[in-house]
Length: 149
Image (cartoon, rainbow, N blue to C red; front, side):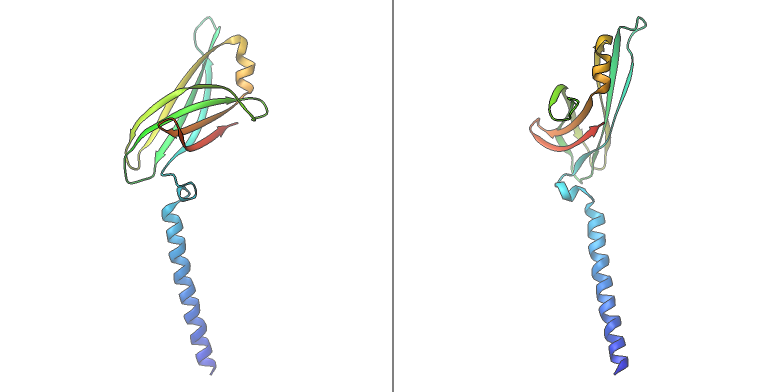
């Protein structure tokens, strides 16, 4: 009788282990894109500020947005916009024009660069702001977004 209980316990353990491994492999295959339904996403969003000219009256704000296509198909019509948020992160205080990304091939990673020039008198305002990069399809459907705080 004990032998049957041990064999039954081992059988159930093996079935549970197999089901667990199948579920885990399915989740690792789909990645976190399945949560949003997106196959393209922003993987990195950084900014750099530098002097634009030797006189020093203009600053250059450079945004680098890294986009990754995790699908097996080309993605076309993707665009990136960077928004400047107010101090409370509650509304949009300004934005930088749409950049057409073009066609992104399967498993391709692309860095999109956006430059913005501003006068030195607005340095503290722009430096203290928070920024939001939005990846959209044809300017309307939001595919992914990432904040730069």
